[in-house]
Image 1 (cartoon, rainbow, N blue to C red):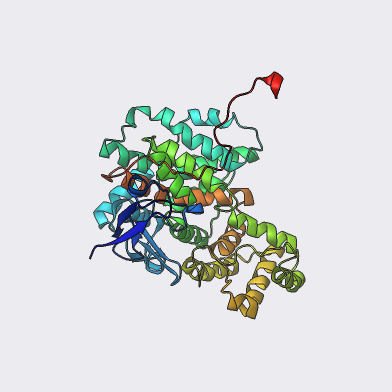
Image 2: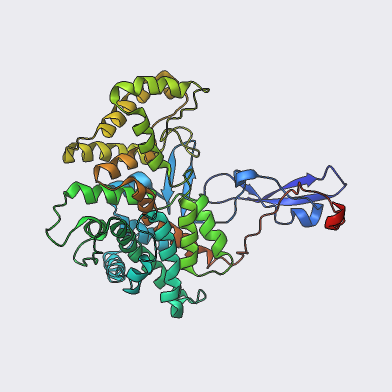
Length: 429
């Protein structure tokens, strides 16, 4: 049922009748598209906390209830029964694949996993100790120069091919960036391996001996990729959509998403968890850290606890917590920082201060621990996030390019600078 909101300007007698739009689930939204035309006013919403920037059928979040749905499917069910590649298919196409559809999709991803040999030379242009995210961002953006003959975003077949290429090649490029920084030869993808196992081989296999990879490693990575595949209109996804609204090619759009993800307030959160654990130092210092976290004047924050969107609990954390403990037990990792993390988790889950404020460990807390247990270096944590989130980014990019009323992004502002004034020659200033 449709309804309207009538808004009257306090500065004039002008009024605007604004339609109220509803989706299939979740809050309704006031359509302010004609607000400026009818009243001469804009809206002001820093961080877009109350503004819907688009219509999307991909991901739904209810932060109060701790709900995360991909195309309507609860994240708990996908984490238990699906795989990352099947989830990627779902995000892109809107439905779970049949056996034949998945076989075809997996074949396409597998056989587009090679990167152009010239990219090796491209990587050598970076300093040997460049951050992997800088290398990943630049290299993904450069793909438009290698596939310039298939950049017609009006062609559905070319759009789908670009999406496949990005999902297929980003693990290969990510592993190459890592190996370049440590001076190892770049490994080619092995097509007889599935997605996550293939990536781990490209990361860690050396020519002199085969890689002994525990089964739990690939399972844990696959689960993390599912949980990080999409998260509605977050900063990096909104960036991909904003750049995409200009008609930019998909590689530029995803490179922009990677740049946004690099921010410590976004994709760098699990890296911040490890830095916090190092600051705490040893398990016997956890009690003091808990007390410091309660003191607003201490300047110390517990990273990886609570979430901006989820007000009760992060459903992804509930899932990954079990896998985190399974990985640590299966690998028998002896690491002081992991001991600190387990002690911190135990203390925070029992402390009334954290319980009352619902400051539970979130997905970033556990994902960082799993990556560390898998011997993935801290500077690669955000790269891992980017590999997973690429499937969501391309799903949003594809959706945006089939939206009839999509417009170029153009936020407005409240101007607070000097009013109109006359130029004075330098001699009179």
